[in-house]
Length: 362
Ligand code: KG4
Ligand code: ZN
View 1 (cartoon, protein in one colour):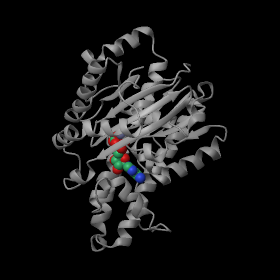
View 2 (tube, rainbow, N blue to C red; view 1 turned 180 degrees about the vertical axis):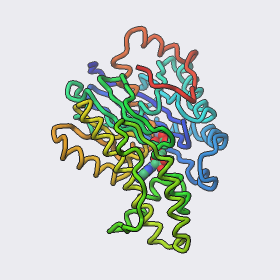
View 3 (cartoon, rainbow, N blue to C red; view 1 turned 180 degrees about the horizontal axis):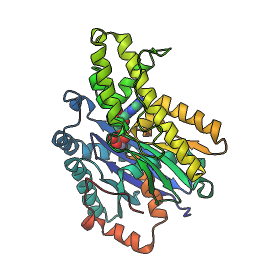
View 4 (spheres, rainbow, N blue to C red; view 1 turned 120 degrees about the vertical axis):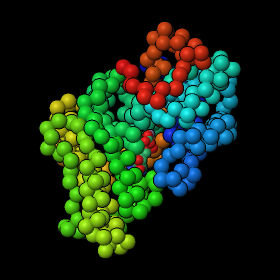
């Protein structure tokens, strides 16, 4: 592994956050020097979800100020930057284009190498940011199992080494974050639904036994998921209890049961994958990894069944979309890159394209 510190400027605009970061990688220590996230949540909340063209317009307005802010906060400038990185997909194409074309321009102007990073690769590498430094001693980490839970993805992935991914299970329909958002909407809770459901669930100490939701595909015998059925079951539950629709304790009880149903399925499948693939490390990745119950209960389940496995969660601030995670992924890609791959990065200002359906490359 290279020992010279590497300074990376990264940008993420795949959805509704305009995010930039300056990160310093030094051996196995990946320190965030600055991370700026300009959120559009209040803008999109009134539509109950992200409006792609509105998001793009906001990114155009915000991108240069947030790049400047990250450089200022980290006390760096273009001369200090060794590498540029940007999310090239998947995501909303008008939103991705803003980040990609901005970084292509800087790559050309500053004559720097540029790496296009897959959004999910970024989420996984949030687990390698300081203070999770002990994860990064390579020999102990791999093979690594990642449970990826975001607004667009729900996957179990095995990584035999850095930059290598095998999807071993995934959702057949909605992503778990999407299910949180839709269930919240049915309960009259604000967007984004995940934090709102978690907050309401916390208000209930003992679950109401009359409020039960299914655990889809719990016993399917494979590593796949399904979350669209839980959402329909929430709707049925609300219709059956029409008189309690606005009752705060009913809403909180449904929120708690919904969260637990999702957590139960995620834990069961992760334990099955751990049993089958025997990883050294299990990491949680994606926006839903901000869910404290999921973090805690998955940790307990792994500790009980596989006490020798290292379980990691991203620092809470880097669970949801941010650019530090994109820089972290770029750092590991760069230090393991061949001479050819490095040359390609120097030409990326000409060749890099946003791809709404980007696939993880191995
Ligand atoms: O990774 P992310 O920020 O964006 C995507 O890549 O999709 O994930 C956003 C998702 C949303 O669906 C949001 O409701 C969910 O993560 N989320 C949560 C929590 N915080 C965010 N879900 C459950 N509990 C939370 N505390
Ligand atoms: Zn994300």
